[in-house]
Amino acid sequence: MGVLVTILLFFGLAGFLTWYLLAKDRGEREPAGALWIALGFGFLAVIGAAFLESALLPEDILTSSGVTASNAGSMLLVGIIEESLKFVPLAFYIYRKRYFNEHTDGILYFALAGIGFGLPENILYTVGLGTGAGIGRLILTPFFHAATTAIPGYYLAKTKVEHRSMKSVFVAFGAVLLLHALYDFGLASGLAILVIVSLVITLLLSINLFRLGAIAKADDQAMGLSVVGTNTFCRSCGYPNPEHKLYCQHCGKHA
Image 1 (cartoon, one colour):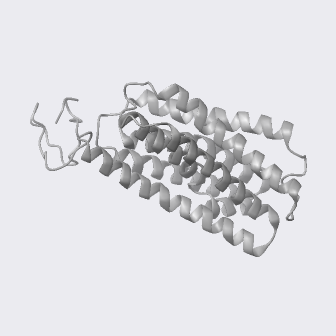
Image 2 (image 1 turned 180 degrees about the vertical axis):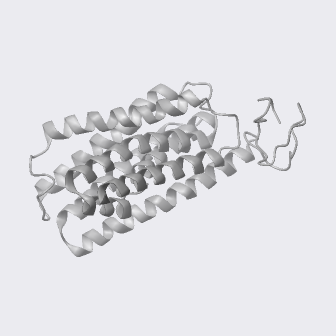
Image 3 (image 1 turned 135 degrees about the vertical axis):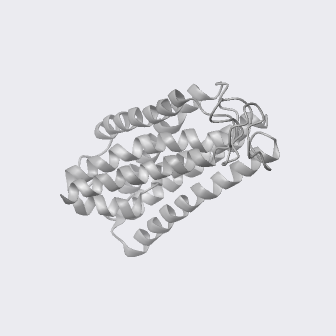
């Protein structure tokens, strides 16, 4: 029963974050198929990561502890594998898509990929290691994978929308790799001070996810890419538009 409840809580958190991100997107309506594809990229990434990590990492990676060069190298490799598989394939796929045209899209699509990765990973840990492990991940990593992937995702969207250099994307991606590795290393070390550092990292990443969402929304409004001001009724069909969306949910035209 405990395992089932924990899994349901993971689904609830994933559903909440998805709803929140979609609610914050006040620009052009995103294709439903594209949203599912982003989730699918994340799901495929967790399969690829499981294969690569089982092939490249020591067999005792989940049980070994201590501040050793071997553990540090393993955790860095985990960060590289997981963040690369979550971000790079989706980035190549989505960058030239017409609907990838707002700052908030960088948060939305790449956070969804993170959800597609994190949800099955959390379920597998819970089923394999028990309720205690699941509860630990509920506390430590409710939005971890969504938060890390959204950072370079935001800068990728910013690069496209504002016609900027890719430099900021590479910097953001490199920073995320290191943060992921440091987070994993702190937990694996068994040292209280490093575990606390890991807790701080995951907390700040979660906060930053919502902060970046607000920044992206403001960026879109400043460039006229999303709703700003009042448009209580659709100018095309007259249907109520209480959420002030850019496109009418009734007729699909510009509100």
